[in-house]
Length: 101
View 1 (cartoon, rainbow, N blue to C red):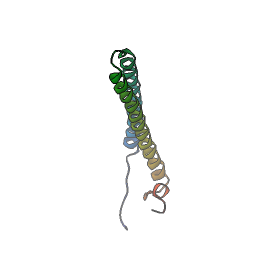
View 2 (cartoon, rainbow, N blue to C red):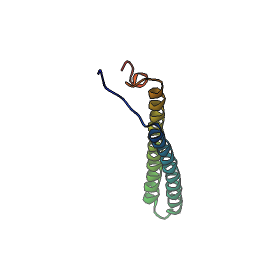
View 3 (cartoon, rainbow, N blue to C red):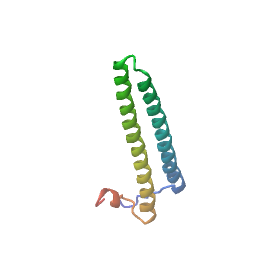
View 4 (cartoon, helix red, strand yellow):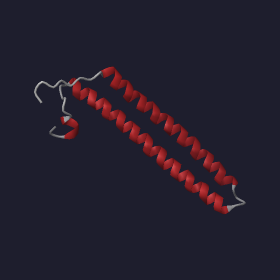
């Protein structure tokens, strides 16, 4: 790889990491609101037990998926921060992230 240059625009990458963190916060908030809504629907559907079970399953699924998505977004943000610090320290092959590089 002689002659190859690896460049990184640090502010852009750091801004992307911050945006991912903000998106994780939004997903968490929307997930909490949806879980609360399904909890209300579940509690008010006493006349139809199958619907209460359905709302309960929906509530659990939304809670699980929103947490997974938020965690994934936070992980991507952490990876971008790591890439910036690695690049600043001279690691242009991702050795700290991918092992030997």
